[in-house]
Amino acid sequence: MTKAFITGIAGITLTAAERGFIAAEQPWGFILFKRNVETPAKVISLVGELRKAVGRPEAPVLIDQEGGRVQRLAPPHWPVYPAGAVFGRLYDIDSALGLKAARLSARLIADDLGQLGITVDCLPLADVPVAGADAVIGDRAYGTDPAKVAAIARAVTEGLEEGGILPVLKHIPGHGRAMADTHFRLPTVDTDKNELERTDFAAFRQLSDLPMAMTAHVVFSAFDAAHPATTSATMIAQVIRGVIGFQGLLMSDDVSMNALAGSVAERTRAIVAAGCDMVLHCNGKLDEMREVAQNTPQLSGPAKVRADAALASRRAARPFDRSAARRELDALIAQAGTAGA
Image 1 (tube, helix red, strand yellow):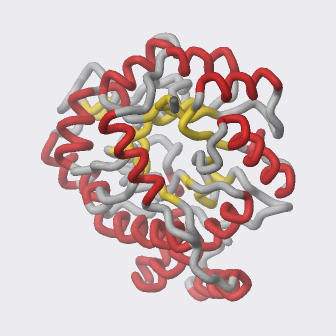
Image 2 (tube, rainbow, N blue to C red; image 1 turned 180 degrees about the vertical axis):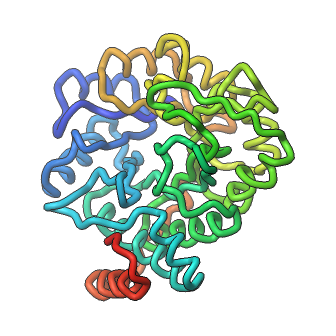
């Protein structure tokens, strides 16, 4: 039976040990990083290997392909895409232009992923950064106004879905006020509840119908001063499921990030106990992968219902003229005098 975790692997092909682990532990899905990417043919082969190893041809394969600084697929085999902030600047000049560029970029990314057999992109972001926040979000964000951020995130979602790719909304309930990079340490946000609901949570609320979302390893002391959202039952029940109203599949951000305390096994148990449906493990270290698997339950109950619904929401890619779309995207960016693509 499928277990409620998503795993990375170490390289561009499966080792015998990884193949055995996947067959035995049955992760729900997989996530790829730059270390797994060489040529298109090798990525296609790896995606096929992963699905064969787990014995499920529909098993989701995820990637972080945003554009800008976060592109796991990059030249020379894949084109460069604009960072999220480029769409925000275009939006400020002409909102329709900004939304069109965001949709086109996401549709082009979806075409790249679809050709490789990748079915899920960890995009869009709905984080609303503030002055002085850590640069880990920075130009990945679409802007500082929640309504604008939500509008651009919606356009990105539409582009992905038109290309047959499922979106993952991140980093719920908001990473924009974090004064530290959660890869290295745990940030605490002391902003009051009313302000958080007016700003940080507002963009996510407008996107609460998306099929999947990824948590933020951020403490919001107004709700739970002891735990980051990822391991906070209060944050998940009251804010993510309550205030924001998100009812889709909720996955953790990477369980191996240093913002979380304790061993990988302890972190995994805490993520599950808090109410996340899915544990995400990214670094491809087999000893940690085993810890995650041993402490993750079978996918069942409401979590399975949400996981099944997310996969069922995926639609076939619509007809698409890639060359025309790329020319149009480049022209939009040039028209605004913005370098980014």
